[in-house]
Figure 1 (spheres, rainbow, N blue to C red):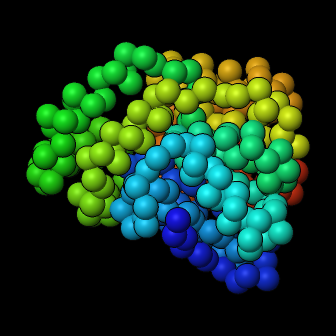
Figure 2 (figure 1 turned 90 degrees about the vertical axis):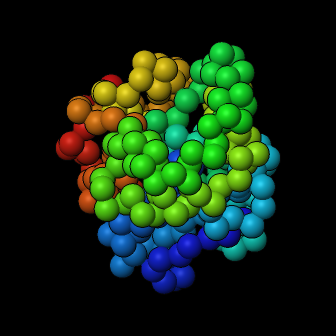
Amino acid sequence: MRFQEYGTKQKNVILLLHGGGLSWWNYREVAEHLQKEYHVILPILDGHAGSDRPFTTIEENASEIIDFIYEHFRGAVLLIGGLSLGGQILLEMLSQRKDICSYALIESAAVIPSKLKNALIAPVFGSSYGLIRNRSFAKLQFQSLHMKPELFEDYYRDTCQIRKQDMIAFLRANTSYALIDAFRESSAEIHVYVGEKETGEIRRSAEAICKARPSCRLHRINGFKHGDFSINHADQYADAIRQIIQGGAISILSEK
């Protein structure tokens, strides 16, 4: 696994795990906001543009990042955040190593498997994969993701680099992931974020995470869609990280 890093190595460490089909630039602005205060590390998940190996499983990605933390940071960091697929990998990390971080920020992570979606991924992407290099089609796809326009070139460049087998693998992993019992044993202070305009599946997943571990704090963000928080509102996301670490209130959110 490869990593982008911001800030000096003498600072407390924050890791941020990007969403499926994106790459480290998912959190570029957030890292720029935080780099004077923290050492921010942005892993490039397996099977994505700039990665050094194919995507296998969520569990394997989690193990790789845990090994990295043990090798470089004595087995624990201050905070880990993750969006969607990255959020699922974070949940798995918390399950595999209960003390891997002091704080966790989980955004829009699905934990309710969908057999139908999982079954449709291979045939749908098998027939339409070639369209991802069509710039007009890519713009339509990009618009459906509700990301700010200045990220299109990053999105288009990196989407074109994802191999079909990797895209199918991480999408199937995304639609089949479920929490395991060990998640309940995590010692981290866990914050779960969900946009009020996300799908019912994602909203129910946020509630399921907090039900599995009742000490989690659920934050519902008014007017936000999937990925809105970290991708389109980097300044507010960075402020939320600061406030979580400092124990303050998070003013833009409506809490459980």
